[in-house]
Every structure is written in C-alpha cells, then in structure tokens.
Length: 334
Image (cartoon, rainbow, N blue to C red; front, side, top):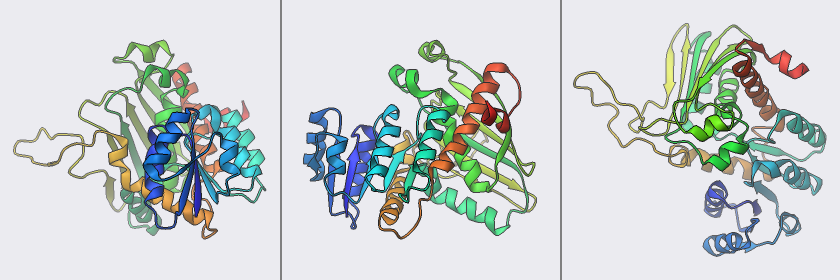
C-alpha cells in the first residue's frame, strides 16, 4: 500500500513514523509547505518527497493522510475526494461549522471514504468503556465526566487561529461522549475563565472551561478542560450507571496525586504529552485507516460525526459568551 502524507509538523511526522512501521504500508510520499521539512522527513522515513499536495495525489497513492494546518483541511480533503483517493484528516474538518458543512455536502455521495482523526475512539480504555455501555452492564447512565487537562498552553500563534478552547480542545471530549454513550447532546451550559497566559485572554479565549451537557435520554455529562495542569497531561472518562461505574485513565501514569495518608497510587511518572498518552491509540487509528483504504471497513469517524462534535463546540462557545443555556437546535438554525 502506497500512502501520502500532507503536512509534516509535529503530528504529521508522528504519523509518518507510524505508517512507515505498518506492514501493509510499502511506501510513503510526503509533502510540506517547507521543502526542507519534506526532504528531511523523506530521508528519515525512506519516503519520496513531493513538492505539492497535487504531486502527492498524482503519485499513485492508495490513501492520503492530511496533517496540515486547519485552514488547509477543506481544500485538501476535497482534492483527495475528487481524485477518488480515501483520505484521513486530523480534526477539525475546518475552522468553523459552516465550512465543515460545505465539506460534508461535497463529500456525501462521492463514494470516497473520509476518516476524521478523533484518536480517543481507538484508545483501549475508551473502547472498553463503550463496550460496557453497549452491553448494558452499567445499566442506564445518569452521569458522564470527561476531562482533558493540558500541562501548558499552546503557542500564541496557535491560540490565535484555534477557534477557542471548545473548538480546539473540548471537541475531543464532545466526540468521545457521543461515541461512548451512543447518545446525542441536546443542550449545553458553559463557563470559563483565565488564570494565566495573558495571550489567551487577548485572543478572546479562556484557558479553563467546563461544560454541562444534557443528552437526549436525560443523562448529564460534565466536560472539564484547562491549559494549566502542572502535573501533566490528564485525560479521563467516568461513566456512572444504575448498575455500575467505570473510569478510563485510572492507571499508574495518571497526573494526579492522592492526599490520602499512605496512598501510593498512582505510582508511575505522569503523562506529560498527548503523544505519549495516546501513542497506541494513534497506531490503532492509522491501522484502521489502512483497512478503510483496503475497502475492508467504512470510515470509523466520518465528516458527519465531526460536524456533530462541532455543533456542540459552537453551542458551548455561544453559551460562554452569553452566559446562558444553548440548545443544539438553536445553533443549527443560526
């Protein structure tokens, strides 16, 4: 299988390394706006450098991975679909929901699979949690808690174009809540504040946020996020049902220390970065994409899935700004 990669920054290079280690991938064709970056990656991974995305699509690739800047996602997705090449694109589909909807309309009925990268769907703990919900062993859910706490803020240039914490960070939690519970969000109420990093406030964003989500069966989900978790990168999910309760992320590298006298859990070095927390999930995600390319399975996370998570982010952004509950139907109609 010959795979193309567009964009070779931090995550693009990580994906190139992962793909180069998969048995089903015979060769890579890579490109980046900085030619020297493409040349360096080509040498490192034994890939063929290309001078443009168009050159990648014309190089006989079976599938393409898009890890370019968010602004480039819509154009690159549509170019791959037009060429009839299955495409994996890191989230989000686009900077805003309106542009994401335009991409959705363009790819619907194309017959070309598009896989949007929400890696937590491939984390072993998250997949086990979903299985527990689907099996009924937890009973009807009443409370869900999803947490993403970053150890430090992203660079100012990233924050300026990210679209805000709900669209950039919380959206992972929103997708996970939908996927694990199998339910849709109907209403949100969001709050946030700034405890540091003046450039985040200057960009009109918050560095710490919480969202209260009401699901269509009455389940309540609480999503918590911050850019300032000094102990490390903390991602957890709790599911509380009428029969049982389970948690994802309660392991030795959990970035949390107990205040209980004599407690020794967790005992390992805390996770410090999303790539170490989700290294196995990323590998499973790209392995799944090679199966999509081979025609062995449909996309496990479609553009339509990504748009649904985007609606929740839009509703939370509006709720934060106007200090009120917002329904998903309201933002859909706007």
